[in-house]
Image (cartoon, rainbow, N blue to C red; front, side):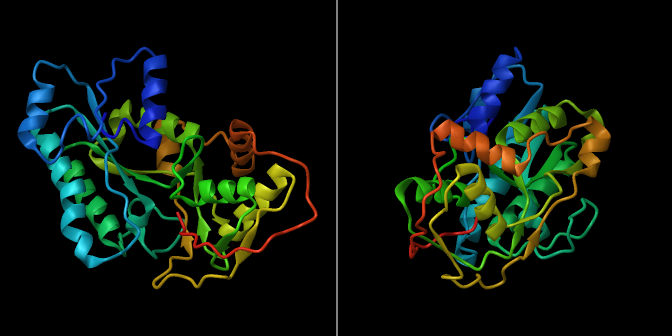
Length: 292
């Protein structure tokens, strides 16, 4: 597994170890995936059934100047892994590859990436499919241990610190997947021969407006989340409905998302000890908040 020290990688490694799998876990510090010879040396003498490629370089800037770095981080590393081993490669991409396409997104529809990040994931995914692996288009994962650069942790931090947090009007819909369900889905995908050579969405199929996410968190916490909806404008080229269709994954693996967004937020609050009584105030907010 690459990206084992990341948010999703840590949880997936723990689950696989619990199931008795032998996991060869790599972090960026342990192996430079842009160095093909380093990968070959690391894999020498190691029997590998499947490679789950989580490593990547998140980027929300949409700056064209970032394209070369992102192509190296996603396309080049994927190519190097494919050349170093004949094991099945499970490559993790993003629903952003569909861009502003018609939602809910289905695997057979034309992609329309609107950022160098999404484009680099799309290119790597095509390569994986050509090699007989599986390209997973993952929705927005949230759960314990996620870094503060994502919206759900930002909202939790605002709740705990008393704010403030500025947001767009929050009408854009996103498909939020709890960490535990994402881990279960990836394991099932890796073990499913009928998905190989193609693309599969890993998502809930349910779109939630960001303003409703705030409301659900308030219900779970029992007190207001200090945000200012509408304090920030929508981003240029904003995608207002980014929701995947999980039917292909359900048909091939019988996977179902088991944890609703309301339940997941409750679990997340419990893990942080953030739940508390309803307060009378609802402080303002001015701090910038990037959408996940």
